[in-house]
Image (cartoon, rainbow, N blue to C red; front, side, top):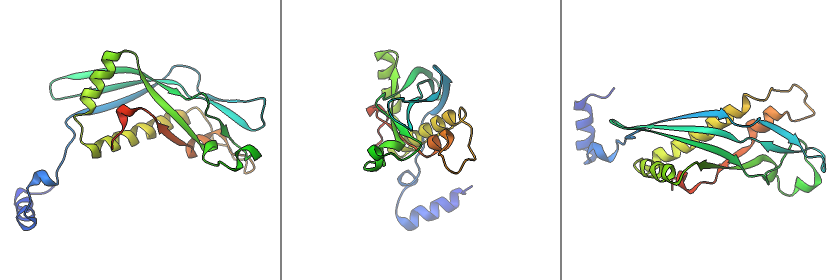
Length: 178
């Protein structure tokens, strides 16, 4: 822990104030993922080794300020055009990114909830928004991984490994931090 004397010396030397390098988040945010539908990867029978992710779930976002707290009941929806592959196929050889990424969207159940969330989220400094975004993606991935077991077969990519390695892109504008 820094002593006030040390902070004072650093600020004098750099000719700055503590506000120039200390930022904080004025709220606490807690994310809770709940199974809404069955979490699974479903084989697409028209093409070999292609999987349709079924990763929709409920997301509860709790925001606590000093005196107020807010709870937002939302749902994570995955773009149904997303397809994953556990084997490289000729159709996917050209676009390696496509087989390892999914787009998700957080859907608010009411316009009022969405507006209240945006109001609270806009109070957060940009650097922390990025941290929250990354934390949301990490927690969502861990939630999904809890439904898939690792596979020891070296000749096939397990669903667990596929979920672990895939890129998850949150497409909501509300969560953009730049």
